[in-house]
Image (tube, rainbow, N blue to C red; front, top):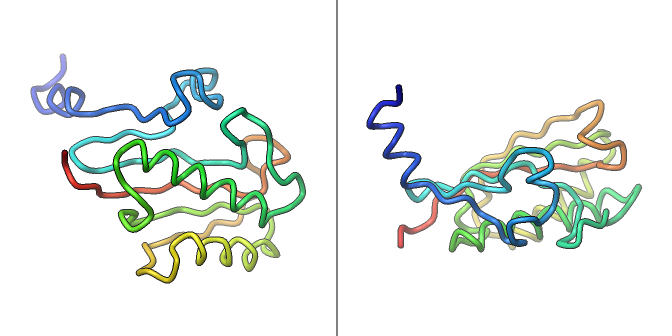
Amino acid sequence: MSSPESSDARASRRLLRPYGPDGHDAPRFAYSLGVLCGGMVFIAGQVARDAAGRLIGPADPEAQARQVYENVRAVLADAGGGPGDIVATTTYITDRAYREPVTAVRRSFFDGADYPANTLVIVAGLGLPDYLVEVSAIAVVPRR
């Protein structure tokens, strides 16, 4: 039996689908690209696939990072927000050598503004072998 609090949270949340209901592999892998709930935006880990599902930048961490952050931007825009609304990110890379190029893209994405909190995690692998970078984010957007 669900509590009134959980029912309220469920009723106030909106799934974010910047690429339409079938965009990316979200339905296939049973997750949402993002969820807006009470002014908070929870963005699932974004990888280097464009709106058509094509991998961008095989073997190129900088190109992948650019696509990853464009995907973060698209999900956030669907919630009515922008990069300045992000309060925390988690960045996953598959090689320590990718830290500098990914950080350069991150710096450009936030355009010198106050940077959100970030945790950098170096992992043995991501969802598919060609993925080199993944970023998840939490943002707070003005309530509409």
